[in-house]
Every structure is written in structure tokens, then in C-alpha cells.
Length: 256
Ligand code: PEP
Image (cartoon, rainbow, N blue to C red):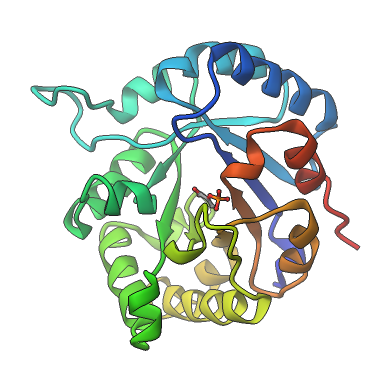
């Protein structure tokens, strides 16, 4: 199976940006451009406080809507946190796990990742599990080691039959929000390593099903080039997903 048979996945991470009305405007615009969604999967990850409204506007279209984080327990004394079942209840169908800002700004440890991914899968949320190295780790030739450690943590409770529901996002920390994009060669090399790791962990079949997407300063002018690489199955877009005039051209990248 080549990446042409893995459905391309374009996701926008809105982070703590856009107010409620802008989120809803964006959803209406994206929805109007999606068609039947057969040739590519598109999703937005909205602030959790707006998810109910965003999913209501997205309803009836193939647009996926996700949360940006979750806590792995079902309920309890976890002030400020949101459980998988709560995301589900407001209509989200997916969630980001281990985004670099969660890891580096909020110091989320590797030890939480496996339980977060499992909680998402058990509650019918499609997780995008984010991994990526810092610039110091890359300069110290530790990229592969760091990413394998993050994969070990996140896939701790993942089974081969989960492969079609889990996505890995390779997001080099040094390329997020910096305007600096990994070259296609740099990204493709890491994506290949990730797929090999999945093959060793879950088997060849699962590794061919699991999508591995790239994130880090994706823009309309580099989307097509990144998507042409064999092991890059999609894009996780931050800054450029906040406006229709940059996000729509990425969604509509020319796949030929
Ligand atoms: C992200 O936050 O997932 C991201 C890739 O951001 P940006 O596109 O702004 O680098």
C-alpha cells in the first residue's frame, strides 16, 4: 500500500486563537469547499469551550472536529481538565495528544501519553499523537532516539487493530510557529523511520494503514511538495489554518 491509498489528512490546529464567531465563520467556509470528502479528510481542532457550537455548524458535512487535549480519567477531581467522554458528548470525533506545546509549555510527561491515547480510542475519538524533537536534540543527533521514546510512550496501549484510527503527527519543535519548515528530505526521513517503528511494534499491515502526517510552518506554497513525499500522509497546520485564504489552498493542494 502506498501513501496514495492512505487517505490524505489535512488538519488545522487553532490553538488558543480565534474567537467563537471566527471559528464558526471558518467552519462555514471550509464546509462549503469540502465536497463529499472522499478524496481527503479534513478536520479542525478548536478550543474546547467552542466545540459544541463548532460541531453543530459542521454537522452534515465530512469535516472532522476535535479537541486539542484531554485527560485520561473518566471523571474526578481534575480541575480544569476535559475527559474523552466530554469531548464526545459535545460532538468532537477526534483529539490531539502530546502536542509540543502541551509537552514543552505545560510539561506533560511521556508517562501520560499512552493513557491519553488509550482513553481517546476507548471513547471513539480518533487521536493524532504528536511527536517531535527540539533543535538541541536535532543538533545533538538525537532525533530518532527522542521520537522512538515518544512513540514507545504513546503506543504503550495501542493494538494493531487500532491502526486505522490512530494518526501520528511528526512536528519538529523547531519548525512550529517559527516560519522554519523541515525540508521535504528531513521530514520524509523521519516519517520513514516512524513507519518502520510502527511495523516493528504493530506489524507490517498496521504500519501501512497508520497515517503519519507532518506539521511545522506548513503554508500554501509548501503543502504540495510535502504531500508528494511517499511517507507523508497529511499535514497538521497551525498558523496557516487561522485564515481561509491560507487554509483553503492547503486543503485544496493539487494531489497530482
Ligand atoms: C502546530 O501547532 O501543530 C503547528 C504545526 O503550527 P504552525 O503550523 O503554526 O507551525
